[in-house]
Structures are given as structure tokens and as C-alpha cells.
Length: 258
Image (cartoon, rainbow, N blue to C red; front, side, top):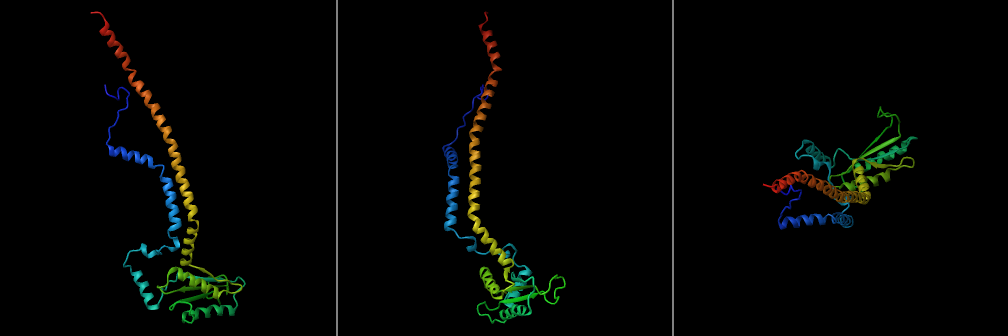
């Protein structure tokens, strides 16, 4: 009669290496969460922030050798900057911009284009657009908004372009129309800064959720073991019970007189 028929659990003989590995896996489960907490603390205190990491623009996601990339590089070589500015300065006065105020905005852009502003890198470009005299037929307002697109040489880093744009916005701001920086560059840097400011709370919440999941699963293991044992014992009795009548009949046969 096999061990399974007798309702017994067959012992599995394993090697020493497998037993050591199994004990290590079971024991180290208590060190996973503390290790993650320690690693997160080290990264937060000693690692670089998101703003200090190397910038990865959309070009890293595109295959090399595209004609559009060649055209943009050629425009930067011919004109000193890209013709697709990714940053702009916007200002608006709902009561309307006076002619002198609009002139100030345009003159400031011309000064940047002609290199008369020594605080900016050579080759910088400013292109102002104003909704004046019905230049834009679809505009519902007249002489209320000015958008100045800025472009800087490719040698200027992304954070430096944002800083130059902020400086330009301060210079063209008007009493009733304060200038603000917008565009892809400004939005991308602001998004990175927002993530960096709230990264610690995201890590704390993540670690808490992982710890809760591990705690719930750990508390479920004893119940699972007890339930498996409870289901195993009746099976042993049930397997042995049908054999009892057969054993009794055999005993009577041997004990009967000849």
C-alpha cells in the first residue's frame, strides 16, 4: 500500500543547495520592505534630482537620418537658431494695449534680433505677433494681446533658454499687461520641477502600499496552511475507512475453523 493510499504525506528529499535557497527566500521576505525604504532614502538624499538629470528631448525617440531632422539642423546652421521656437512670451491687457506700449514690445524684439541686447546670446531671435488693426481676422479682440516667440542658438541649454525667456518677459512687462513665459520648454521644465517637489510623497505612498500588500499576503499564509491541513486529514480518514470492512472480513476468514 502506497503512502498516498494510507493518507500519509510523502517526504520529498532535496539537496542541500535547494534547502538553503528555500530558507533564504523565506527569511529574506522580512527584509524586502526595509531594503526598499533604505534605498529610497539613499536616492533622495544623495542622488540627483530630476532637474539635474541630462535632458532627453523628443529626438531620442526618433530614428536617425530623418529628413526633418536634417532640415532643422540646416536651418540652425543657416539662421543661427531653429525656425520652430519652443518658447514664447505672452502678455494681454483686456482694456487694450496703447500704441506706445505696442511700439515698446516691437522695439524690444528688434533690439534682440539685431544683437543690441548684450545680455542675450548672439543669434537670438524674437518674433512678436500682435492682434492689431485686424491683422488676424479670426481674432475677436483688437490690440489686446502680444505673443513674442523666442528662439535661441542650439548651443544654449534648455534651462538657460527658459531663464533668458523669463528675463525677456520682465523687460517687456507693462503695468496693465504683465508678460508670462509659456511654450514647450517652459511647460516641460515646470512639469519636471512639480514631479521633483512631490516625489518624496509619491515614494512614501508607494512604500506604504507595498508594505500593506505584503502584510495582507503574509497574514493569509497561516490561514491557508491551516485550511490545507484541515482538508488533508479527512481525506486520510476517508481513504482508510473503505479498507476497514475488507480487513475485518479477511480476519474472520483466517479465524474460522477448518
